[in-house]
Length: 222
Image (tube, rainbow, N blue to C red; front, top):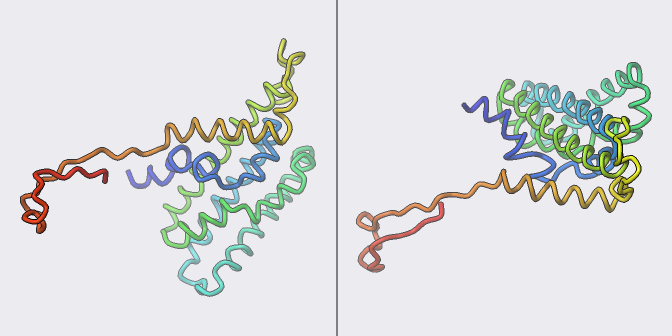
C-alpha cells in the first residue's frame, strides 16, 4: 500500500500543479495547445523519474553541504539529453516549447522532489514518487490545455471543432484566460484532494487534568 501511495499521491492528493501550486510558469506558458502540453509533461516526467533514481542512489555519497549544486548538475545533464532527443525526433515540438524545455532544469517540482523525497528514501520509492509527480504534472497540463484550446481556439490538438471554431473565446489562450482556467482547476482539484479529519471523542477518565477541567468529554479535530 505504501508503494502504491508513493505513486498515486502525486496525481490527485499532492498534485504538484493544482494542489501544491508548483511549476506555474511552464504550466501557464505551454498549456495553450494540447500537443505542447503533453510534450512538456512527458519531458518533465522523464527528468523527474531518472533524477529521483540517481539522487536516491547517490544520497549517501553526495556531501550535505553541496547537495543542491549536485542535484542541479544531475538534473541539468538529464534535461540536456532530453532536449537533444526532442530536437532530433520532434523538432516541431522543440521549436514550440522554445526556452521552456531547457528551463526544466530550474523547475521547482523536480528540485523540490529531489530535496524533499529522493534524498531521504530508497530508489524504488523515489522512482515511483517521480513517476507519480510527473503523471500529475502531465494531467494538470492536459486538463488546462484542453479547456484553453477547445474553448479558446476552437480546436483540439490542432483539429478544428465544428461550431466552436467560429465561436471561440480568444482570451482563454492569453495570460488572463490562463490564470482564470488555472484558478478554476485548482478549486475543483482541492475539492477532491482536501483531507477533512473526522472528529473523535475521547473520554476524560485517564486525563491528568480531569479533576481541574471537570469536563466529561473532549472533542478533537485530529
